[in-house]
Length: 144
Image (cartoon, rainbow, N blue to C red; front, side, top):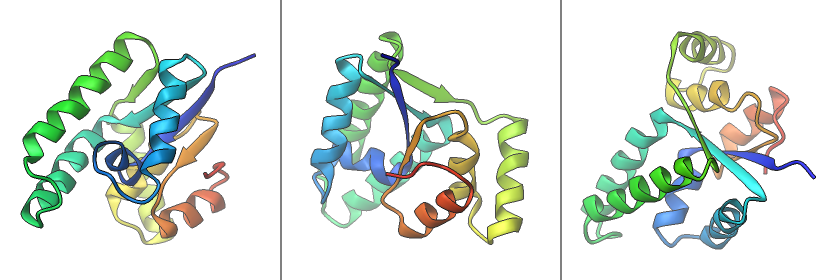
């Protein structure tokens, strides 16, 4: 049986570290990854986006200390890379050019376009952003 692969956008990643609706689903996905049954992935771009979201959550009182939560995210990501269960997608010229094409085609922010361009080669795409999910489906991604 081949290992499935799931690309996570920032909306999904944050649910791992902040209890929100559907956090349990993301936690299950991580459990499957630790068990070697699912390989997860995300763009290095997401690292910065997670920091921004956590900072805003701290300002709104949703998390007490964004830096501590962010350190947990980095630590777990580092461990999963070492276990070969996390594939980090670099932000390279190819990804940026493909992302810009999505910007012009769909009128979306480059941050969302980077997610689409980085998800290439993954079996599924996990997002909790409705608009991004619709565009991902149009682009032929299997969205969960």
